[in-house]
Image 1 (tube, helix red, strand yellow):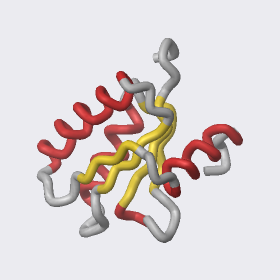
Image 2 (cartoon, one colour):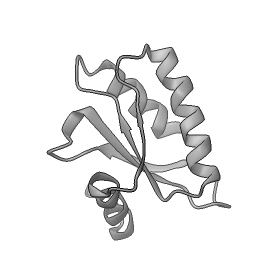
Image 3 (cartoon, one colour):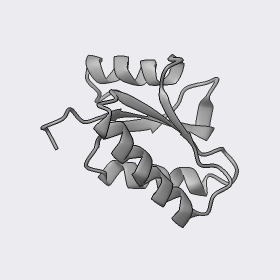
Image 4 (tube, helix red, strand yellow):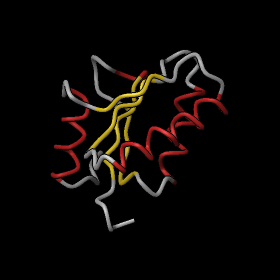
Length: 103
């Protein structure tokens, strides 16, 4: 996380600890189902101009986390995403949404 701006760090922290964060729970879904639901979720978050999102994928084998984080790294609506810090830990990824008009 060392290459993040102070603003990105602050937004990621808010995504981790905030109570009013738009969140989706994907654990238990197949990779295909999870990515489909994730894209619908990100479309909604972008339309609502949410500053950040929280994605629950569970820890398990780590495969779903890998697939989701890879997808987020290439997604037009996501500026940056990282695994959450404890206590949320590896079962949650948080992301900062791109500002409208900067896609």
